[in-house]
Length: 367
Ligand code: NAI
Ligand code: MG
Image 1 (tube, rainbow, N blue to C red):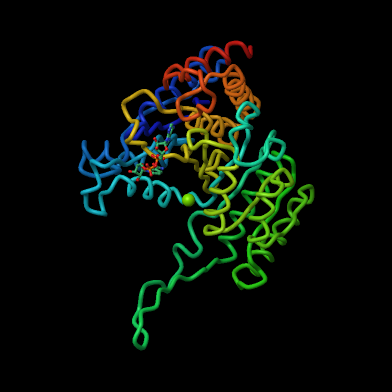
Image 2: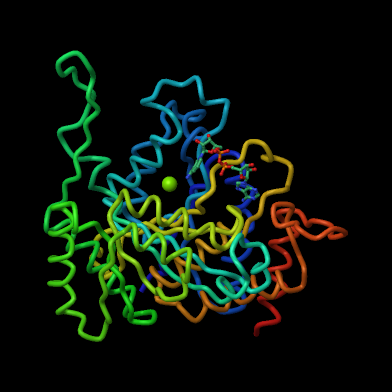
């Protein structure tokens, strides 16, 4: 059987800098764990525009459709602000998500013990926190018709429509149940069935899907109550599944419980391919950080954690993903910090590559 394949799209700004550190980790797994990947690399975003006049070349799109996992850095930057909307760097990213039909967006909120003091919440509320928000990504109010701004009488009316089909709810629910089966077998579904018909249908379909997963303990919560509970005692949750709009808000809020943008990974999954693996793209939550690009200051951990998610969710290497996450915690416990994680005085930050090297040392120590 051929090796699993990965397409790396470093993109713009700090994208290539953090991706260079992911490369070190991929090489380490090949050398020290004999886990080999067929890795190819291509352009996306502004870098692709500079080379081809488009933020995503058709050839790159075809490669992305064919690999087991896409790893993306970040796209965009001030240099491209003047471009027409149709060729803006973000369009490359949106095209990938749309054509790969990545409907299930996984956003973890995980607290590394060494950074528990960093949170805006009390340490005992976040220490050891490890939850996952599954956000529906391709439907709901951001896409529903009718939409627009119309004239009505003597004023304008802004319209957006929340619309979900049963099959759209079912597939994202299924991916959340599958995830829950690999974790603590606890799933909380959030909507507003008290005031929205789409929420009533959401609750019915999720309940229906739950019959296929009798081991998973399912609960339902109104999304506003869920927001309160996330701030009050987030450790009551394991996996949360919700729609596109609520997921956008809840995942940003939950992620920030645990600290810096430079620490946050994500995965976007689609339907299973012929080999059983889901279509998948992994990327840090942060953007191209033009303010620090080229200075070696970027924190590569968000991108490395995105690769850890690939190990777990595309390649069934959960133990190796845990090894990588533990190595990162070890490094943080030693007090190694990139500039974005500096709280204490008297600590000198390491560079992007310094952080990557420290993680490699900790991986060696894990053997
Ligand atoms: P940003 O996430 O790039 O940066 C926000 C702030 O966080 C900046 O001060 C930056 O220096 C810092 N930061 C971000 N990642 C960091 C890291 N790994 N290590 C240390 N510090 C980090 O968001 P911003 O400034 O709003 O957008 C900059 C560009 O990135 C824009 O062109 C935007 O369109 C694009 N963008 C791209 C995204 C993507 O590719 N998925 C997501 C968000 C923004
Ligand atoms: Mg958001």
